[in-house]
Image (cartoon, rainbow, N blue to C red; front, side):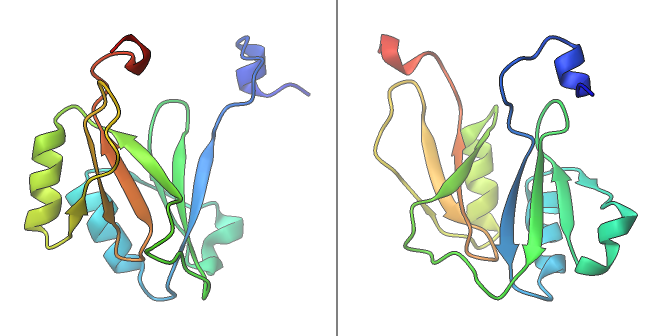
Length: 138
């Protein structure tokens, strides 16, 4: 049986979701950060997973999602693994994140990709960027 994406002609693997650990009981903080502060739309979790305390958000076209899973093993803030959100107005997101009390920090510059990083309430690292042009043409 082909997936609906294969039926539309997509032949390469595509990213469908990213799962990140959160501390048990921190769902309200995650909803406040990703839903209220960043404006992502929360998605219902399948009924078969409802008892696990999961929080899901839509994060792009074609059912791309962020999944937050209660876990006792959390990312350490010094780790570099992260995911990136492309936004239209980088300065307004940076201002909103800082005004909400989160520390932002810079990474190594990438041509045509201004960016900044922060840690979410669970310590997961996020990158925010605006893609101005191809970085290879800089």
